Amino acid sequence: MLLLFDNGTPRTLARYLIAYHTVTEARARGWEQLGNSELLDAAEAAGFDVLVTTDKISVTSKTLPAANLPSWS
Image (cartoon, rainbow, N blue to C red; front, side, top):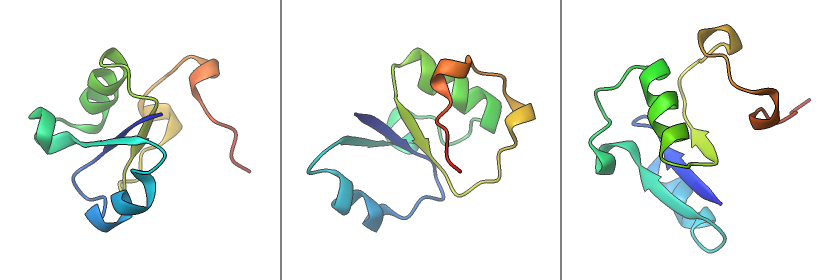
């Protein structure tokens, strides 16, 4: 699974995930200045499966196909 870490995501978290997933930081892609909507667009276009962020992103800020939204209850 391809994971994208947003700027505020603790780097230490990556060490627990890299054994099972590929982790890339937004700043490594030059995306550190993108807003939430632009970052989601860039991540989706680049084929990332998950965006890990500490930002509060409301579902209404970006409409994604239902198949791409995980169900976390």
